[in-house]
Length: 127
Image 1 (cartoon, rainbow, N blue to C red):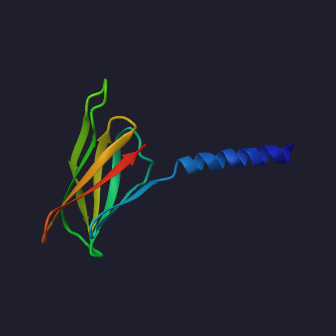
Image 2: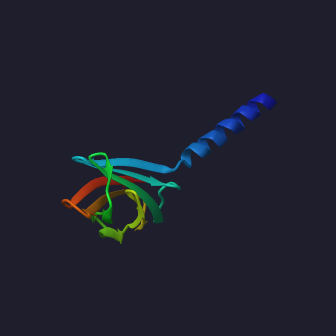
């Protein structure tokens, strides 16, 4: 009985730790790749995301702005959060977005490099 209780508690602890995994997602548009991470799982409210942006395998430096939105649905207005990411250097960026409720959010990442053309990478975040 003692062994069964130990196994059960171990399984419960393991399942709870698996739910608390950090967020990670990759998005791509042509040769521009964005790796999105968060130290904590994404939740309703304020979320700090880190971005690693490369084009043709090279880190991009410039201005990165973000727009997270959820379209209007019956009985619910559209929601939106916009921000400009902080440049951490070497293609690394950090931004805080406020996603008001759980569900599927569209995320558009607007990249304006110091040289070259602007680009937009689109993805979704579901929590």
